[in-house]
Image (cartoon, rainbow, N blue to C red; front, top):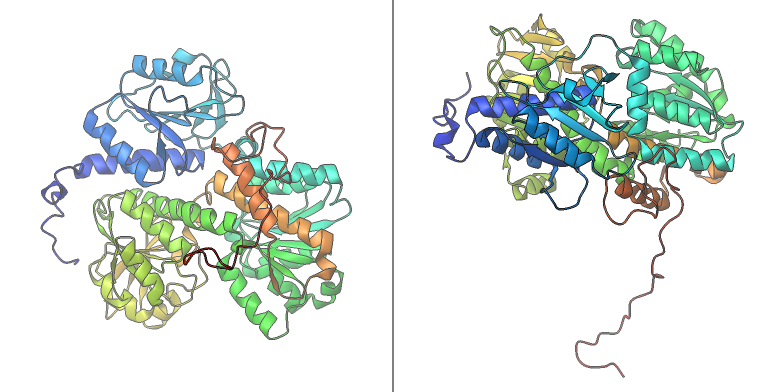
Length: 589
């Protein structure tokens, strides 16, 4: 068992300002429920907590601020993105009225009924509601941009794929702006684009935006990354989809090859599996291709090896290395979605199996951008976090960020939760598995096959017993029994709806920028992993700043359906070379 901690039973003994465990657990569940049903980001959003017990309000406020949300003081003039209602329905109604007054069109307002014991929002008071997506109600009599969420109500079972796609589209202004510019320029007409990404609503929006911009789009997705309802919507829209959530490994390969046999000019990939497949199985297609775009760290690693060996037959744009991708998708998106999906799976276990993780100890393996985000979210939710990284510079970064640092094999001995965020196979090796505390929960953020050495454990005699949805007990004959989530797979994709919409909007805008690069000058690029144009980052960030209600975006904002030009950069001072002469000792002669 994990080592006894005298402050674990009553964390207030260690910090009298800290919420009691029950309040912390309630705040965590409320935040996660809202993120789950909306698939939206908490970081960067302006929020206000309305009414309620001051201790509950403080716990919720602390969680939101820890996750990067921005508190909005009443009367400061800034538009509020989220109202978290804890008090009476009358207080909530007054806050909604205030927040909707003179609200700019296209600025989404999320009203969250987070009443801990009784409802804090009277949904009927606002007039008839409509289902915007499972768990989210629209209030057309108030505004097309006001939506209600109740943390006390489970979402509907109806997959409502069309509604989920519409919901994603409204929160993707940056991708819409880039695609609109491509459409107006006619650049993609006659270009066939093969999309190989996690097939869910946001990917559907990207595919439809490419189609609207004039491209011929064909889609492939891996078996465990396919939402069949979303695939059906794309097919009805005329987009060929080669994917099924029930496909065997052999069928999955056949589907991927069928997509490649449509002879795409450009591939948009996640994990570089299809890019590598075309080299292995369809090398005759390479001379006809303009190139590919890859959006993951783990996907770029093998491509760089191929390039070093002279085996890469097309240019591949490193979308993952775009600042507007890595700094946001990897850190804030994957951090939020990984931790939330992990805790949601644990909370859904039967009481006799479910461990109590409130205020527990967590270990994050790897402190790159993903590991930073995972650690940040865990700490915001009350975990005591230890970081393990073999890179001494990253380990030092973790120390400066306020985390404990230890070798992974030592850190896991007292951990309640272990999250691997390296994207490197065998990170949680058989040796590390044997060192884990009994009952520890193991999860993977993104990553690659066998990041947790499950196959090695089974070869060593480990038994796998299903104990809940996507949760197994992995018991070693000479080691502990641990709870393995989703077989060590990419937890935020296979057990949830992927990263929040707003960060995927940034990533997909970068993907669209990469497609533009390849269509305009793919023939001129080296057959290598090539960086994305810096202009793509700058244009993307300017539109996103406007969408998040911050200064520095392009003129005209970016929240409405019409979008904002992604290519029109604000005027900047002309770059000048610095004066190389020092004036520290007087004016130079």
